[in-house]
Length: 84
Image (cartoon, rainbow, N blue to C red; front, side, top):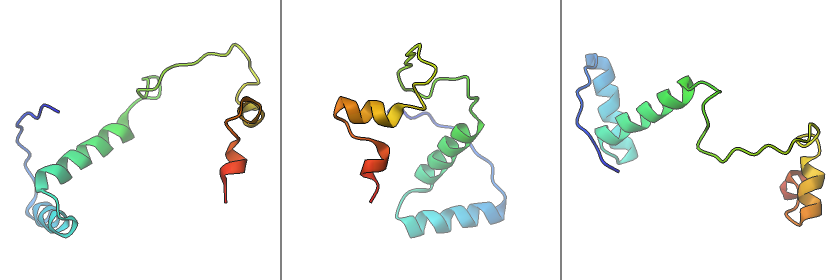
């Protein structure tokens, strides 16, 4: 990971809270800020963007509805079978 320097201006109260949380978690303030940036990006991304996963098109409109039986038949098991 290649990190780039940036500047963030915070209110005094937010900076105190940031320092406190970072200390409690045992991480740097910078790591906590990076975590917050990643969360903000995830919350604000549009759904038409790929999530970094391969796209699969089965051409079967019932594929999602039948996913448990398809997984079970393929030997992977189903979601329901993995629940305790």
